[in-house]
Length: 466
Image (cartoon, rainbow, N blue to C red; front, side, top):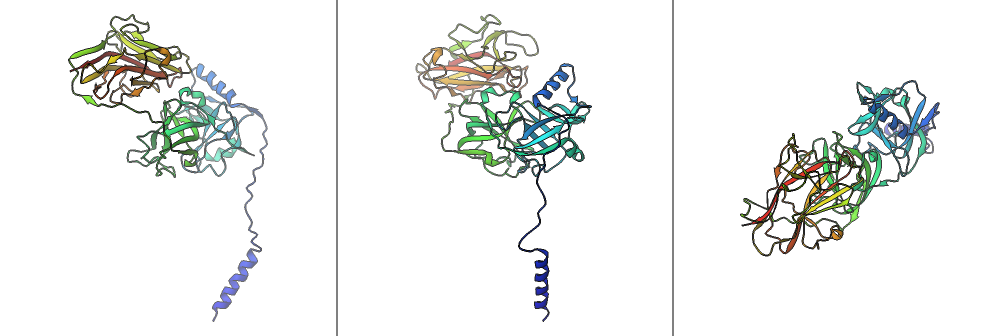
């Protein structure tokens, strides 16, 4: 009999605590901070680091200064793909430089939303390069360490300004270190065919990050798409279509390979059912080379440090200043007598594309043809050497780029992880599934940036038949 009274009492108490649904909410308004000092550009402190590096120092610590830098947040840890770091850039649109702030605190997205303007007090902080990108934190020996959580508000000031980020549209053939730490976008992009059945980062082989191949349909180049195995969306399947994508350009843990990282899967807008997959040619490999030679080249008659010429070769520089040259060395990366070498190192080229194309080969007059070569490198870095074949190139340099060139995927080409002092066989590449008049090409793609200025060498090229 006491129950009705009890419930009535509870109702009265609740009514007396909350009236007219007027809940008291915490005040989340951000007041603009008082900046007692000068605001300098992120570019300016990048110049300070460059001077320190020129003097043999890997870092620079700011002391007795009242200076600040300012920037807009371009990363968020809300979905778990970033951790204990805030990336900022100098403008909401068309940025010129960005910097990574490392801090021993999480989560950060509740305070540092995308597009929010921040002011970073420099006094007591240290700048340097960590994992290949421009970073600010505290001194940790000769490196940059995380800002302690207890010092967060001392160094990082939030503005009330929150703007809309506009991704800087980039091309993969023009990547350089100056684009790292920026909010960027790719158009006409897709995941590689070999990856579209995979998840973002929950495959058995994914340990710290899931690394997938993101391709550009415009340049036919690719970049590593990296997702943390701690992200909320790691188990989602990659989209199979193509479209646009926006995220942050950064580098891998070792700082030697460009990575594309998104804040969330909502940044991947692949809604176009069309794909731009290049048709490949793969006849497989044979156990042995043929005994009858159709074409052979060992470069022994070439003049060293001169462009490869003669014997039917077309040595074409499509972009940049570097072509395939004759090279001879007895050092740690010895040539095979005289070899063909190509590199964009110290070229200053924004983009290097060089072709070495064989004379026309008739695959109609014999059967069971095979193709073989040797390759080596002096650190390939992010540059590429592709082996291609065309059945419709007319032999004119002006039409090389317009012709159809398909990858010979069975050919092994030395990679960046292969020992630079060794020479590697391509395998006996079977050409018997191809007919007609063909040209075989080696195409080098790189640029003068230190991450893309690798060197490749070729030798002992033969085309034969049984």
